[in-house]
Image (cartoon, rainbow, N blue to C red; front, side, top):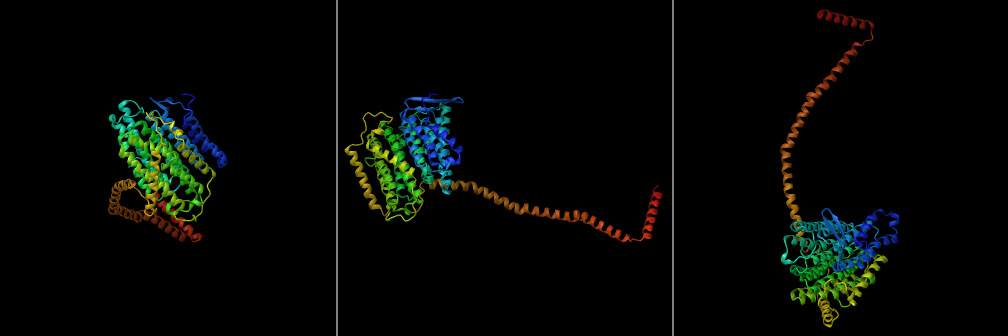
Length: 598
């Protein structure tokens, strides 16, 4: 183990161990709590910024294997860097939270994400993969509502199944090759175990139709926990897909379908956090598509978009989380007029909304256009067109619909109670907003870290790209204006593919419960006709025995004692002559018996 390398997960694991032992009075001190919480992400950020590419650290022997915890290259560094940045921002945003569980679960979750990014073998990936699953499940439960409990269980079931696919694949791979090496797989040489591993990764990437856990769970997570969740699970999956399955054409098609599918459902949603959750599916679709196309430009585009997405999606969830914290709901049909109550939340939210929409001067523009241009250059015209269409829906739903109905909605002013936000929430959102703008204005701030060498450097700030994006957003705004009365939010839950999963669950429960209930019915009938009758007859028998046997003996003894008592009472006359006569008779009787038997 090299002393110069500090694994970014270590600080979070230590924090998770320390928090339970901090005295309550000390923990309730916000300054102390915030200082303690921010140390781990700052250590992680410093560690990532000082890493040297193409090195390997922390190879730990375990049984007959060598677990490589520190594979450092350009790909792991850029993902580790943005993970550390969002960990710092998310920690600041959630400093007002007093529940120790939030810090413990969040730390384990973030540690799992870092562990997967720097893992050099599949066994190490799996260990940290499961740590992420456990930590994120408890982050959902931290909301402490009935809905979050159910969503957390469903989330855990999905990820347990995905983890089992991953485990089965890596064990079969080890049996076939004798190695857990985590290297890229050529689709032409793929084996059955490679497909199992791919499915396991695709569950965490929310690839349609394996995505239903995401819009179900993320909206129900705690306010601060959702900021972490929108950054780590799917982007860790993007990382491992890029590491192991770049160039798989099926991913290019699946990613484009994700981009379109997520946008469609986001446009008809009412819950603001479900809108953003569907857009995670959509935006991750761009990344998966870029990985599937597999050129240097699309891989860099996927990496850049993952980086930008973590920042602007984190800011979007922080903005809607601020609304939820202030007014207690994020259902658009119940909002409106908040722009006068939460003006800075509106400004910061719009920075993220314009970023995800690909507006020039924001970081989504410099990342999304690279992926789409890379698809077109690789002659995947239909995929590029699909992603362009998805960009229209993104601006309509997140850039216009959500802020319009939340902050205006035809209301002059929100009439309900608006709770003031803690300063730390504004600080976290402000840092994230500044980064979204800085990367958009100065793309080299992000491009310098891209891992794949390209023959020709990509320049987003060209006239054709700016005009194309501006026209696309302009027509998107026109489309919203024409359909504004059609896409009015309605208070209902859209289940998409989750309908089929719930149907399968009900059918499965019915298949299990129906035979059990029938067996129970038969047993009840048998008991009623045979068992109950036998018990009644047995009861009658014991009653007869009680009356004829026990009662006869007990009652007979009582009667005998009573009669003897009566005779004795009559004998006791208090007359001396009577007693002498009784004694004489008794003595003669004894003498007669002795004489007769003697």
